Length: 549
Image 1 (tube, helix red, strand yellow):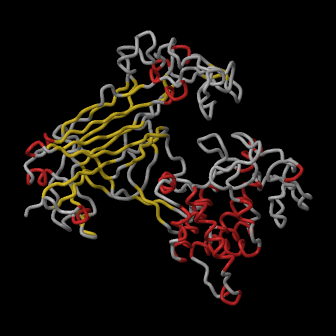
Image 2: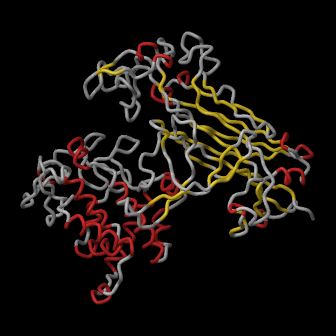
């Protein structure tokens, strides 16, 4: 019996776009583990196959020889692609027998459909002001969602307005005006070259490196602009001193009578958490200046109508946000980790891993922690957010430790500090001594053997140092935390930042396994260090020989 299209799906189901003022999209790159003399991290980036969109809507695969992130002062935007895929199987067959196949014009024709039977709807919305005011009238987006037929390959702008049912006197965006949230394009398929005819048509694991025949969509985010009422184009006091205009004059057209203008999170319960995330919250009367940005979340919905009236649907989500200023550094807490938290019992999943799998996960986590620390000015954020410690969290000062405010978190009297490490005073060669110490320490711990040594030399220390998921101590808040790891950083819920639950369960399971089955000293002495660890050691020794510079 002939196969039919059982389902369709969009790959990837979730993507992150990044704002940029340049009209040239960012080329693709991938993270790789390879030594790079210009990088102090574990991760480096290298170019990957990229797609240039031509004027007719087709794509041209290219392999850049270098990565460029700016056009002068303008940052290149990240514009994700989506592919449409199908699950094929005989009528009435069980789902576990279906096979995946890219949706192409030829596949549609084979099943009696054309591109005009494919419809894509894009619902792009910005609800930041609506969330803070608890007022849906302050949302703005594509009303109605933009609808594009599969045979329409023109760029479709995503122009945001206020909801149509909001009276003119209360609309955030006045009638006749809009805020561009980016654009969307259904790309034109092209004939796929014969396998190996071009570098990108080589077949690997049964698939060409780049398939130009599959049906693709592209989301291009906005330019990273701010909008506000006319008054927002006038100079405003800054928390750091001085005055500046938050909004350019040609973007200061929002309604000054809208609820968002003059909103005060402290006097309009229930307060948003965190409450001070809007322009105007930190100065004057804590009143919103009415400024919004052009980020958005977009829901992409695809429907395919087949002969007989059978309609299949699929969806994907894209989130646009600010540029990534450290693309060769991986965060220790990512969207993937948040999703892992929602897939089941993290402790059970950690216990089901083999010893080698758990080792690999933990080493990867500490490499990512180091890469985050390498971007972090610990001296500054300790000065900003270190909590004054109560007597029961203090001990005798560490000899020779020169950090100021020793009674504050991470100071020389903090009982959580390692007594063997004294931090020197700031000097011309090392103006950020705590930052350098944190980087050196975490770089060493990103090697699994060094981490094992810490566990065995100081049993229980990791459990004391690392916060449990969503854990906060008494009187900790957005601007005052202890040095428990990760220190001086805030979660989106305005509490101290923590590992995801599954990460924490994984780490504690690994620590307990190491404590229960320590590697004998004789065996540990002959374990060769990894290439990455050797590079770290060489870098530290070179800095020591160079006087710490």
